Amino acid sequence: MKLRELQEEILRLKKETNTVILAHCYQAREIVEIADFTGDSYKLSVDAKNADAENIIFCGVHFMAETAKILAPQKRVFLANRNAGCPMAEQMDAEMIGMLKDREPDRTVVAYINTTASLKTVCDVCVTSSSALKIVRAIDNDKILFIPDCNLGDYVKRSIPEKDIKLLNGGCPTHARVTVSEVKKAKAEHPEALFLVHPECTPAVVALADYVGSTSGIMDFAKKSDAKEFIIGTETSIAEHLQYDCPEKKFYPVTKDIVCHNMKITTLPDVYNTLKGMDNGEAFEMIMDDELISKAGKCIDEMIRLGG
Image (cartoon, rainbow, N blue to C red; front, side):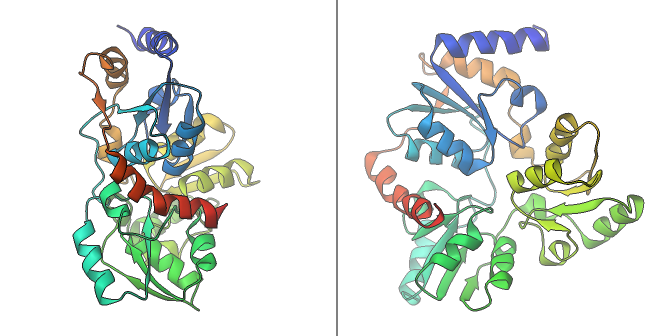
């Protein structure tokens, strides 16, 4: 089956099965084109909650589908590729953070949304890269434990020096891969380009940026900016999507190596096979018990309360 034929069959099947397809911005272009909603992990989870559909297929990684299920427990949520994980989300567990809470019970535990549902059960509030500053400022406590990404945590700590923010050694291996020398090389090759960077990159890389923000923030900034050239300091697919959306501008990945292989593992046939296998047990459905959904949902509810 050719690409366009496969896309058209997916569009037909999703209507037939009352399904919406959510695609994270890091997905390939052919998947983004058939998605009902695209965006970052939190935006897509809210879209899942509000979507008027019985079934949801998430083209992303495991924790994202978990979050969608937490926010929309009455719906069936499927992950298009069951092997799509997130190294950062799996770096810390509930037992480890529970022990730290026992040692320092006066700290509010702030969890990046890129964490497992199990870990969320022992955290006080979630944040996204776009809401982290607003939420940490709004917390009625000056003592914070920020997990798991120490790079995003460092950005928050530098931006809110009046708070005592403790960090642990965790983070996104894809974004941490970007080096200062690569940034300087890209800037030398494209001297007119603005450097837009995700705060999951190292502090030294973030310090060289013209704009620091979430995936959605980077895309919005580039689209609205009067500048014509941009070096993109996040997953390479963002530069590709922006080039489609703004063909009159130029976008350069800061390095060819900033690729999230877990995101890239999902293919268009995975989406097709999930649609075909939802009712025969062949698709990977997110099954979570009510207790886990309730406990993990508390820190997400608090994120919505403080970030709204």
